[in-house]
Length: 319
Length: 180
Image (cartoon, rainbow over all chains, first blue to last red):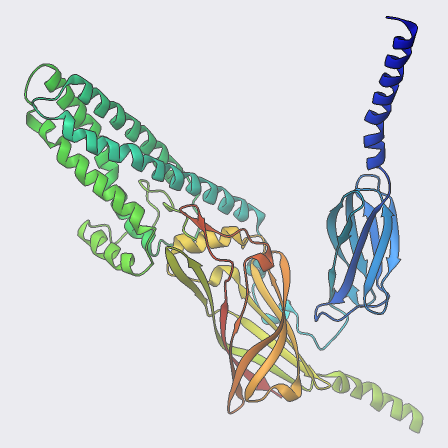
């Protein structure tokens, strides 16, 4: 490499390093703007309110005053996360979080509420006589509700996924039980049945172990959904057992006999109950609820409104 | 002596001067929300709202509150799911505030600006129409609040992975009694 070429490559390297550094440096140019309007709860402008814009990372704060129309604007901000708070005499302070980007203008409107002492003519929540247990938040219960919904959503998705191998198992069952069927047909049927049973158990797990919510009584379609579980639950246990017995008998060259002959019928009833359980949470309350009463009464389950071990607290996550 | 007496009378009269001109108390109410889903049309009803209105200097400030968990849709599963998505355990009350000129509280149509706190958010609805009918010292108010789930930054609940519609109109039927 000659000296000219060496100088060229050195210059090129310097340029590349400069370009690489220039990008991040440019990102720090203070060119962002936060604007907005401060209003009261009726939407009227709050003039002369103090707006404080604080950079969440550096803690650096800038103050501004709203004009007669309640508007404010703070320019030349470094891109990043900010806490925008507004305060005014007679109002409770309010803060909002915002992220501003390079050269962008972010609008942050704040609605201030009158502070409790601002007007004796405004009724307060405490005057309505609700017990404090009803008006105070309960983060623990919220976490329980969140976990319950997450588990029931998984239950719902797995339940829908399970229908595919379930239908395939029922279809292949028609080719697996006859005299002229091959061992391949039986193996495919058995593999699909095993997949169905596995997915079903996983689906059931997410309903059974979803957290219970104290003081909740089952009402509506979920009662029918649960009643169906008393049919497809035992059916999903019994069907593979009977299927294994039938498989062994056929593999020995025998005709399917004894209790194993019920494999097909039990499977059909199980699949039908499973389908009805899915449909029940897809139909309007009321229609199915009335059916649920009848089915539950027929099954001797009508007395039980409480949570039960088979179906868990609830078995779907209706909107 | 007369001045002292006058000051004393004024001090004693002060609480009476700042007292509200009149008050309204919510006697009974039916609040009904409607949700729409391709597979479902559902509604939840609550009769547990409480409210108070204080009128002073020709302006009436009303406050209405209702526990989120008091809404019943006839399906416990749906109600619990709704309670979860609206963070009803963390923010257990729906609080509505409005200010109405006292002169407008009469039979006919009334338009009110509502401020609603729900699910940890505050939304404002301008000029919501209500029909007012009177019977004795009671006023019955009916109307619909055009609420949406996005107004309160609520992620729309889903059934079979399909979300509900954004609109969740709330029908209001309230009977207020005036207390002088």
